[in-house]
View 1: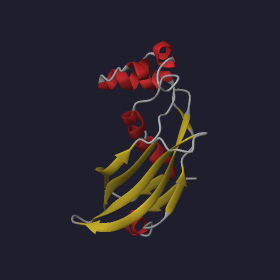
View 2: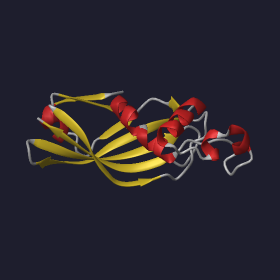
View 3: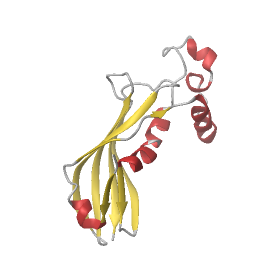
View 4: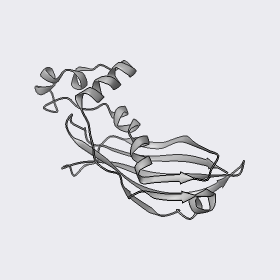
Length: 152
């Protein structure tokens, strides 16, 4: 279920909130190959399914940075912010990739708001904890603390 907020006041009220989960997203070989083409990272564990069968993961896996990049579309399923003039991804405080995402696997995002504080220029800064869960795995694919800024 998507949480929708309107304006900076409602964003501020999210401090400490659990935003829940996105839907599941299947990681296809086509998506992995497209990411490899875009980034130039064509390591065989990602793009050579035949060779990857005999590799350390028993098949091809998604790039860690592909998983990280999917935070953006998954997060839009969790939180819809309206009534602001601009929102920016301000950066990340930390990122870890505890477990691989196998091609054909499904991931989803769990998100919570750590804090919200005012920033110069009539804005707020949100600190968010993101966990990318892998269907059927006890370990997450990615954990990250993200910073977003929103301006009135």
